[in-house]
Structure formats: C-alpha cells, structure tokens
Length: 196
Image 1: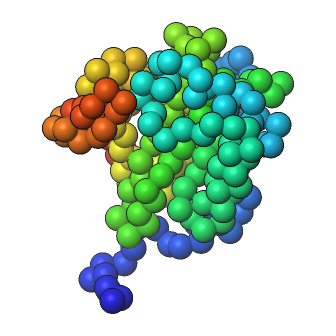
Image 2: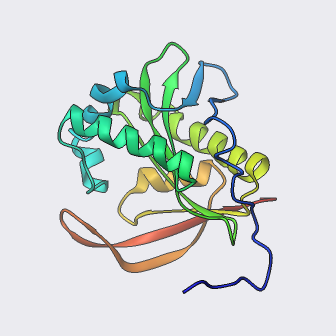
C-alpha cells in the first residue's frame, strides 16, 4: 500500500546519492577526518569487535575480515540507495581510530540515527565527540536533516559523555529498549536538532 504524505518531505530523495560520499575533515588539528571505509581497513574494523568494551555495547558483530568487507560493500550500497551513511574516523595519514554512521534515514521527517565506536587506543582523547560533532554539522547544515537521534545503554557512561560533548541533549530513558549480551538494557535517548 502506498501512503501519500499530506506535507512535502523534509528532504528530497537524491540529496545524498547524487554525489560521492564526502570526506569530512574535523576542525581542531590532529588531521582527524571522516572518510568512506576502504577494503584495507578490514583488519582495524574487525579488531574493534574483538575489544571487550566494544562488544559490551554492540551485539551485531563481524567475525572475519571477509565478513567486514561484505559490510563495507553494504555500506557503499547504503549510500547509493540513501539508506545509511558509514565512515571510518581516521587520521589524515590513514590510521583508523573509529566509526561514525547515520542509520534509519527518514527523508519524510528529516530524521536519522547516529551510531559510533572508537578503538581502545583512541579513547579519552575527544576523537568520538569531535567526529560526532563534524558528522552532525554536515547532516544538519549541509544535507538538511532536522533532527539526529542516538541512543545508548544507560550503563554506557562514556557514550553519554560523547553525546553531551557533541551537543546531543538527553531527552529521556527508553525502558528495556535493547538486548545486550548480559540481558535487556534501558536506553538513554539523546537528540540534536537544527539550530541547537
């Protein structure tokens, strides 16, 4: 069944796919950039999911480099089909530090969901909050999203700090909203809207 909107969509289809996925430099020095994933990044990506802290909060995990490369191909298709945006957070020289993504793209309402992780060696240096701020500015100001959301377990205090530093306000708690390896978790919901 086709449903017709009574209002025009907040964003026009094609606003992403009409151009290649951009490289987004982060201000503040250090050569931090968000760039599309490359096949050569598979080992670094897989290593993130071997880290206990990453595994605690991410239950959808690759198990081999071949599987990671399939994910990367899916990420490329997500961009082309305007279903998602996935970046490696890297130093200008190429070293992978983490991941940033926008998922659940809703062009009718102009809403998307942010997700991220950072490799252990890059934690505590502001990498995640800087990268999330860059991604958010691009999505809200350049692309035209109106609202970006993110959620994390109420037990994930580091993710809560990242969200706050990147300008995402805590809006509430979604009770028993996600399953982690140790059972169901309440989830904090944060959001950043255009004009914040």
